[in-house]
Structure formats: C-alpha cells, structure tokens
Length: 231
Length: 102
Picture (cartoon, helix red, strand yellow):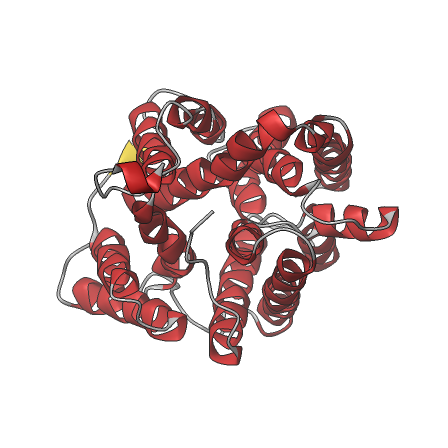
C-alpha cells in the first residue's frame, strides 16, 4: 500500500514524541479537572493506552454523567484499536508476547508506519520505532502533567488540539496516489463527519471503518488512465 | 475517574484488542482479506483526523484548529518533514486564536 506515513527519520520520531508528550500533559490536566486521583490517571494512561478514551470518559463525567455512560463512551471511542489490531495481526511473524504488546500500544501513527513499510521485518521495525516514540512520549507527558500540573497553560491557546490530527494528516494525503486508498480515506472521513451530530461518541469512527469495504469497489491502481501496458 | 471506571475500561480494552488480534486477525491469513485489511486503517485514520479537525464533541465546527490542520495537510502534500508539519499546525492554530478566531 503506497501510503506515505509518518517517516522514520529521527526528526520525525522526535516530532511524534514531542507531540505525544504535549497530548499527555493536556489529557492529564483534563483528568485532574474532573478530580481523578493522580494514581488512577497514570494507571489509565498505561493500561488503557487511549488518550481519546480518557477524554471521552472525562467528557461524560464533566457533563454530569454517571459511571456507566462514561465507561461505555470510553470503550466505544477506544474500540477502533481492536480493528487496527486486526489489520496488523498477520503483518509479521511474532511470538505471542510481542503480539500482545503490539496490540496494547497500538495507535494510528504506528499502524500507518507499518503499512507504509510493508509486510515482514520492515513493517515490524517501522511499527516498533513509531510505537516506541508514541508510547514513551505519552507516558512521559501523562506523568509530567500529573507531577507539575498544567505547565503548558491553556492547551488550546498554543494550538495543542491540532497536534494529533496534524501528525496523521500525511497518511491521509499520502493515500491519494491510488484509487482504492483515496476512496477509503474520503469515504471514511465523510462518513465520520456525517454521523458525528447524531451518533454517540466512538460510533462514527466504527461505522466509518466500514468505508474500507466500499472502497474495495475501487481498483487498486493509480489515477493515471490504465493502458494495455499496465495490465 | 474512579477505580471501578479504570478497571472496567482496562478489561474491556484488553478484550477488544485481543479479539482483534486473535479472532478477527485470523482473517489476515486469507489472501482475500489482505486488501480490505490494508484499507481499513486508512478509513479509520481519515475518520479520526476528520473528527479531530471539524468536531467538538457532537458539534461540527470550522475553527482555528481546522485551519491549522488544513495547513498541515497542504505541507504534508508538499512532502515537508513531519516535524515542520506538526509545529506549523500548532503555530497556525495558536496564531488564529490569538487573532480572535475560536
């Protein structure tokens, strides 16, 4: 699959690491705002490995919701990681403990890097390099946010909310070279946006994942008109 | 967050990922599933990016952050290094907010 994912240069990995640190700090401060004990926030960062899941939980509690809707919301928002794990399951041979670890610290950036690098050892290496940057940054950021409080001030004032989508946007624009990947990206984005006002948090992304099935109807070729020589 | 919330979501998340790896993941051994399994993450990434660009909870907006991510998209299209893309996105978003855009 010709997707240009977050690269594997040290500067790229550093950028992902720093973005993760910033996001960790911001998420920890949101958890502190809903009066979560620091030890629980840190355990959630490590055991859930889902910043969006934590934010979804906090959104329900912050709006006066109870435990059950908060849990359901966090699980729904994190459910995409099961689908991402499914897509990575057979990409390379690995012992069970590596597979479990890979599934635990899964995220969009590392999956995109593995896809771009290809099957086998190159995909495996790409996955672990990006996953290491993302996870260590996330743990450090979460801990810093708890230890020092909100050192970055208002996350919105310095544009932190743009970091995560910006770190993945190269995957989206990289998909444009092929018809089926372009369709998967366009249909996924449109479906999620169309459902956002109506469906509970997390559901739009699950339904958007189904766009990949529709994208199968598009040929796995470039946009250039195919000639006899291409077939 | 309470201990109960922490534990329930921890178990649910683990089961979800293990199911993805070991139950649904078996499909990957079948040649027919290789292409859908490669397209699936693209749809998910696009959905996540779209929502984190245009959604605030369940409201759709075009705000300073949307502008920042759009600039990031243009830079990524031009194959600018990721570190520049990410810093530019935050800088444009912050600047737009300072100029009074939400």
